[in-house]
Image (cartoon, rainbow, N blue to C red):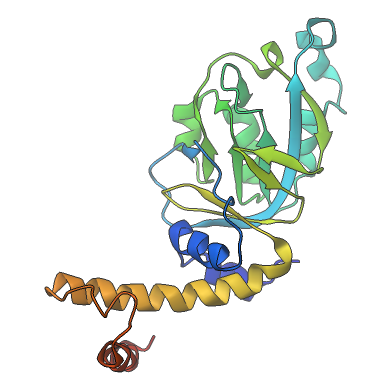
Length: 238
């Protein structure tokens, strides 16, 4: 279970820093490929545990428009079952020829307190989704209804999204660069390390912008760099 302290820490660090922290533990493939923020108004990181939906290729006899009349339709049910604070993650097989969802479903998720939505396919009504107060990530806009290409099948099972394995409960973090997947059991450790790394990177950035060389500073192979960082931390309460 993602605790408030870890969630708050993950809201303050970049996906780039998280990828490095994960790489130190041997995890090389945690950044979802070819997925981008739908809107540009996102000010804070998306953070939440993964709640998944899996699509398979649609078969025409099983996917007439009337399937949406069924209250148990997996796509509709997933929208109503996704827990507040979670992130809905959709396996669309990297196929954006049809939409994974549209603005009405994403609006419903927003009103239910869901933390965000991610698909490796596309969204329809993407201008409207981009204006909503919920982070959303996709490959590209896609107007056709999902039924033309996708059949919603499984809810909250292990999936692949943008070439990354996503297990229910994994911690999803999204910023303006993209989305990273953190295994649930190490989320707290990764958050702690990323906060420390961010403090050091902020110090380094200030020094570089003053004209300082990165040699001996990044990484801090010189003792003076370590001393300077400690003094910076005290001065900036970091």
